[in-house]
Length: 442
Image (cartoon, rainbow, N blue to C red; front, side, top):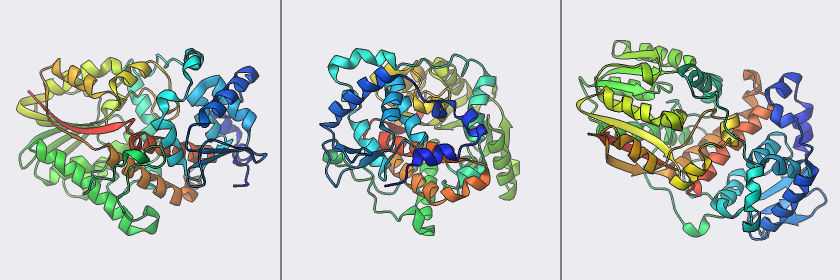
């Protein structure tokens, strides 16, 4: 790779982009920390199966030709950013075009699989220099929660359509077969080889993902007994696939969202499919919702609730259930100790992708659900399926990247979302993250 993408990204950045991405276009002047970071990185790479290539031709790392490579165009800026803000700086350096990789997900998978040992033990105490506290004004009120949702989900329906399948489902799919899991490959390759068609090859790959998304939804509807005459509440509408699928079964569905664009899309979809009389779409917070329902469904919405509001969330789930009703919950999870360690820390993901977000652990879910009389009746863990889902989304976004500009999204946005999808894929592929489909009942 010979193109200096940092120069391309910055040269193409108008004033509005610099205003939108201040952390990306402001270079830290922390030479001492940068020098320390450079020494730490060189030390860590000695044991990792990756290659880090510098402009002078120097190659660091224990990786061979078969291992992922990152090409650093601007080493001094790269080291300074990491020295100033750790993993946030690592991400901002990529957004700025200061480094690249042709195998981004595999590269990040190596780092995710070794996350606990990336900083040598004698330097662990220096981590506090990188800790940035989460903003306090992100999740205190329903209004702030709506602002958080708008910053992500209201970007553009057309943008999401560039990488999602025709169901517009923005959560993990459930494939027919279990992805390959080879523990020996964790540090060199994501664990999601399903031999599915490449999304860039056209309709076949898209159809595989579409079928897997509907399989996921149908399983949740089946386990919570949704059928003709069921009264259903969905917390977090997405773009309407679950609500309309439940309505086609004969259920009466109330679906709530904080995203104005998703509300409009779901309502139009219900009208187009001739089921508007069975799908009621509302711009409403779960804390302001009433009624009793045979099934309360919430797919990958708990991650946006915020840790401080988990008791309110599970209290609402319990209070909204009719006698004998069931909760269908799909949740991304992380190990409990890791969750506790990062619960008050700003990360690259919470800064640029999901403001106010917090991934729970299964321990936290069971504890908070149990406080309100809800017990886990069924639990399916399928994190490797999420890795495959994200890989397909990433391929599709890459194939359609040329259309982002026409929608008003700049080069920094493209790099941000490429990193986000690859970063997430690596988390699931390495086992650092998981996803559970749960049924809760009294």
